[in-house]
Length: 267
Figure 1: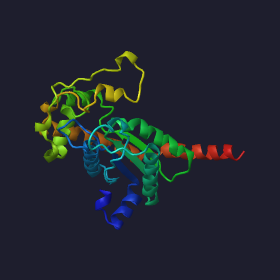
Figure 2: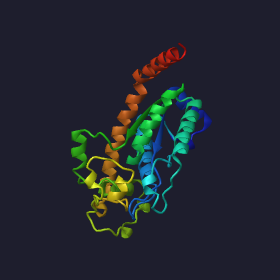
Figure 3: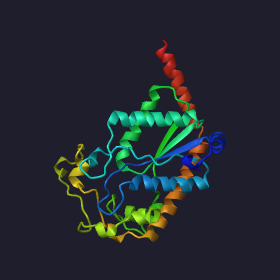
Figure 4: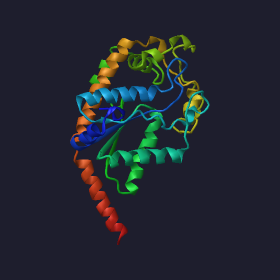
C-alpha cells in the first residue's frame, strides 16, 4: 500500500496490522546521458511497491535526497547540506513513527547512500524513538543461485547506468530512457585516476574513475532483461519484508540497550 494513495482509514489499519513502513531512497543524479536523473529512487520505489503486494506493508513516497556530493558537477544533480540531510531523515522517521508504525525499513537504490544510512541508523541510538530501523540495498547480497539466475539474462557489467540499470529503467519507466543520447564508447571503463592510492579512499575516488556517471555497456539493456531482474529483486525484497515484520529480536535489543544506557546515565 502506498502512503500517498492511502486514506487515513487505510493508513491507520496498516500501521496497526502490519506495523512496517518502507522508505525507498535514492538520489537525483546523472546516469550517463541516456537515463533519468531519478533512476535510483524510481527503481527502489517500484520494487518496494510490488514487494508490498506480496508481503503487505506501507510504502512511503520515493525519497530523492540522499548523499550525492560526488555528482555536484553534473546537470540535474540535487545536493543538500549534510547536516540537513540527516535532520530531514530523522524528521521523516519521527513522523512515520508518530503515525503508528513501529518498524521502518530503508530500501536503498543508490550505492552512495550506504555510508550515510549506516551513520543515520547509528545516530538514532542517541535518543529514544518509538520505532526500530532497518536498511537494505535492493540489489545487494544475492545468493550464488540468484546471481547465476540474473547473469543468465544480463552479463556482469559496470554497476552504474550500465546494462543492468538501463534494463531496470526500461522495465520501470521505459518512456524515460533515451538510448540515442548514449554517446560514450562501450564498454565504458573506469579511468582509475587514483589507482596509485590502492585501497585508500578519498572524496574524489568515484569522480576520478567515473566522471560521467556511466559504466559498462548500456546499449545492451533490454526491457525483457529488466522485467526478469525486477521479478528477482521483488521476490527477494518480499522475503526481507517478511523477516523484518516477524522480527522480535532487534526491538528487544533496542529496549535493552536504552534501559542500560539510561541506567548508566543516571548513575
